[in-house]
Length: 176
Image (cartoon, rainbow, N blue to C red):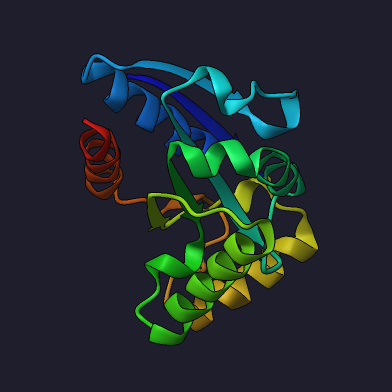
C-alpha cells in the first residue's frame, strides 16, 4: 500500500510521532511518503491511504493541517484515512482533559467535513527547554493541574510508543 503521512507540529513531537509511524509502516512493507503540512505537501490522489496528524495548541490544531484537510476533504473521504491528534492532556488521569481533547478533535472533523476511517489521541511531550519564559510558566501550571512533571530544567515525553505502533498496524490492516 502507498501511504501518505501529513503532519503539523509546534515543538517537534508530532513530527517525531509521524516519523515513527513511517518506520512502522515501512517495516510492514508499505511505501510511505511523509510531509509537513506547512511545506506544500502532495495531494492524497496519488496514494492508497492517508494519515494526518496535528498537535493541539491553544485548543486548536495547526492552521496548515486545517487548510490541507479542508482543501482535500473530498479525496480524503474517498480513501482509507486516519487522524492522529497529539495532546499533552491525553497523558492526564483527569477524565475532563480527555473529554476536552476529544471535543477539539470532533470540532475539527466537523468543521472540515472529514470522516477518517480511524482516529487516535496520542500523548505528547512537555518541551520546557524549547519554551520562552512565559510559555514555560503557563505549561508548568497546566502540567501541575494534570499531575505531570513541573521540572522545567528538562523535557518530558509522555508518548506511549507501543500505542503508536498498535495504531499504525491497525491502520495498515484495516485497508488490507
